[in-house]
Image 1 (cartoon, rainbow, N blue to C red):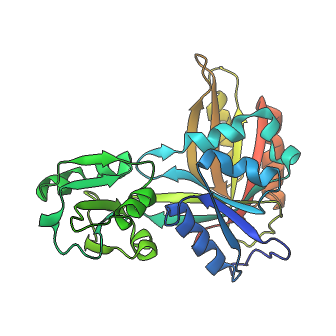
Image 2: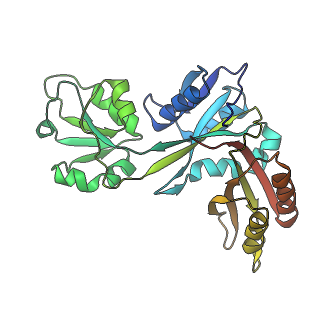
Image 3: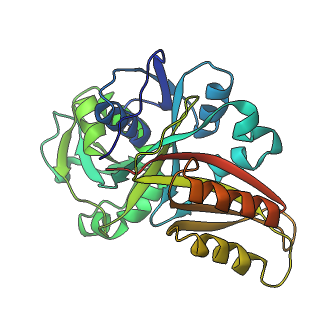
Length: 293
């Protein structure tokens, strides 16, 4: 049985703004799962989230960690790669995850009635790219990049005057926040895309029997070094659900981000982590957390 994360005194959770971002939606889902109302606060970039939880400006943070099409979110990983960001030093860790399917919608001002009235589409460059074929099908070839899909939705909502010719690509969650009309609910060219978010906090989670542990480790540039590490995880019968190599800026220097089934407090996992620490150049345990529903 999945066990809820117990939150007693924490009051705030910070996400990428403005309202209606995928991070905002992920935070809303996390609160619903844990039956706890938190004050949602917004920041200007994902890079601000982890430091703001470290310095206790906020109690929790929600950061994207992996997109099923684009891979690891390097901006977030760069924080954890810093030596002074080791969870054992800064007092934060990954305590939860939320997986959001990526459903891009074409949305317009409530006064706009049809696609024919639209001459410009705005959105994040990744969203524009993921909807390229359908935008071409609709004849919407004037496309303007924005910093976020939610920011694009907010811009469409702010239109005034008689001519409301802008459309945005964003989520249904954003459309609801800005009271926009959705003309195309499934604008994306491919289905199955999703983004996974980590929830960051200063509390420890206890094993639920259905957990994931996230780690970073550094290896020497030697034949078989990664194979030995994978064998350690395999020998412990811990299913590895995620692995990414992360270039460190110098030739042949990489860190590895790995997630596997199990909790760091489980005896088998704890013994495995000790072996990984002894075999690698450096090991950082980012946290153990219940798997997303």
